[in-house]
Structures are given as C-alpha cells and as structure tokens.
Image 1 (cartoon, rainbow, N blue to C red):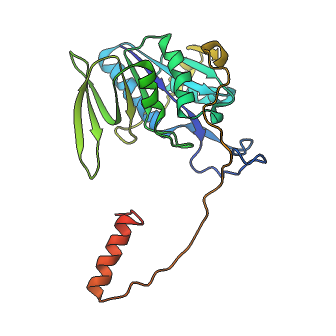
Image 2: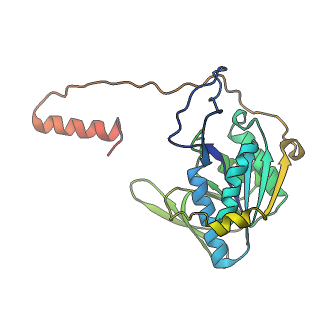
Image 3: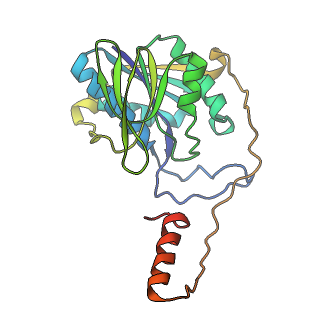
Length: 256
C-alpha cells in the first residue's frame, strides 16, 4: 500500500507574530517552525496503516528550503522517503494553487491513498485536500479520526457535530483529510533520526511541475486581530439572567 502524506511547515503556535514591512505577510526572520498539527496526525495514521498492512509512506511538502527540517522530522518518525516541492511563494498561492502544485507531484507516484491534515494552522483554509481530490478526480472524505483497510477499500470514522460520528466506506485510491486528536502521536527516536539522514529526499522545482508562479488569488493586506474588551449588564430575575447568559455563552461566545 503506497501512501502519500502531505505535510506543511508552519510557525509554532506560541510564536510572537509580527507583520512585515509590506503589510502582506508576517516577518519570518526570527520565527520558529514546526509541522502543522493536523498533518502530524495524518502522518501518524499513515504510519499505523503501514505497520498493519505493509507498503511505504511518502511525505510530500511544498515550501522554501527551511521546510526541509520538518520533512526530516517526518522521515525520522518512520516515513520511507520524501518529496520536497521547492516553492518560495507558497504564501501567495491560495488553496487552489497549493492543491494544483501538490496534485502534480502526486500524479507522478500513483499512490493508493493520499492523506492531508484537515487544515493548516497558519492560513486555515481547510480546502486544500478537498480541492486536490477534485483535481485528481478521486473520492474523498474529511474530518477523519480513524482509518481501517478493508477488502474493498477503506472504512473511515468521521467526526460530526455535537458528539456524533459517521462511518463510511470508500474505494481506493482516495484522499482523506485527517482531524487532530484521533490518535496519540509518536516521537522521533534517536535511531529514527539517524536513519532519516540516509533516506531518499527528492527535491522538485515548482516550475518542473508546470506551476512555476501562478497565484490564483492576490493577498492585499493582513493584520493582527484586535483585542477588545466589553461588559454587558444582564437585567431581569436570576432565572431570566441565567437563561440569557447561557444563550450568550452558547451562541455568541461559543464556549459551551
């Protein structure tokens, strides 16, 4: 079973983000980077499938040279080989542009299964995997927590709203978008880190895939979220005030 896992390098969640002088992107010089969280769960799902059914796991990532550290991490965790699409303008490509870039590399491999994270921690489109499936003409499913191989293809467990789940069957090949938290992530061992240095790591220029520089959307400006404080006085009896408070917490603040 050949599985491709698309991973993305993103700024660490606790990083102090600053807007650069152009106002169109963040200042990258002093940032620390890590593997996108839901992509890490996609990688873990692929490695578990390989351990059960055999085959190989290939990590696929698009980005600048620094993305190599995240790719090496994936190799150290157990992926067999890696493909790095060299693209310094990834932040200028929207979900369609990124999906077309990844799909072009996937076509060269003809995998049985493609896994991606549900969404990226930086841009948060939540669309790239779905669009890639459409570009490739493959069946897909999102919000996946668990994958089981069957004689006819796959059975996947999807997370729905309000604690509900859905189990569906899919043929192969297919594209799945993995939700965070479905399993426990493994760490790279010392032996894995050593082995990663000898594993195949292939670099491809975006131009060689026919997508040299063709952003499908123009990012005009980005800004940090504004911090605001507000106070509301809820009138009425204790019972009425409690009911109003619950409504606000549920539908406005969305914490319950």
